[in-house]
Length: 240
Ligand SMILES: Nc1ncnc2c1ncn2[C@@H]1O[C@H](COP(=O)(O)OP(=O)(O)O)[C@@H](O)[C@H]1O
Ligand SMILES: [Mg+2]
Image (cartoon, rainbow, N blue to C red; front, side, top):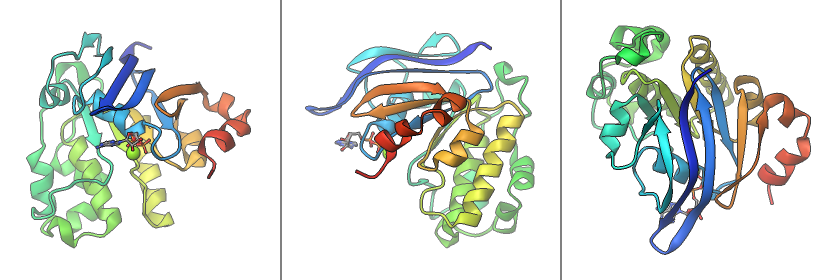
């Protein structure tokens, strides 16, 4: 399958503190890949670089064969990248429906193979959001806020959805709902980069995995390869 996004040897810093020391990974159309690692290893920083929210010190990123260098965040998003950010970051003083409409964007030609998203389809996908459509963001439960964050990203009709700790802090039953939603999105061909601590769920959902340690990719491989090497999970994700 064709390569959708490719990150090559990216280095990035916060002021003088370097966080990424040469991160390379890629994702193909329709694929789900993960960024694994303990807290502070550079997963969110990698996402910030991809979305143009942190400048690269060196390295390159391309999306759909197009270099992203020089593009601002909104320009990158417009190419078809949808972000479900760490901490959700929904508009707490807007209603559910206002949150969804605020980010709506018509599908691009390149997404012709993906079924388009609009308000009706997001409500069909997450019926809870329809029930809560007139509620303000701050009135929602954590799980509802997470569904809203995902629904809002879907309203941009992305070709690639990036989820940073989307099940963090949620009750197990809501987590299961989120995992089922991501599996349904994969089944219809939506490529996803997923960051999460739940390796069991990721092994089922994802095709390939990239393990980050102190700003470097130290292991990569398929779900089968990761299942065959449980020591990798213990070493790089176990509580130290
Ligand atoms: N806004 C920031 N300012 C300064 N340092 C940061 C900032 N965000 C993250 N870092 C540092 O960058 C490194 C990678 O963090 P991050 O990418 O957020 O890790 P992860 O998402 O894997 O938990 C850590 O050392 C963290 O302390
Ligand atoms: Mg993070």
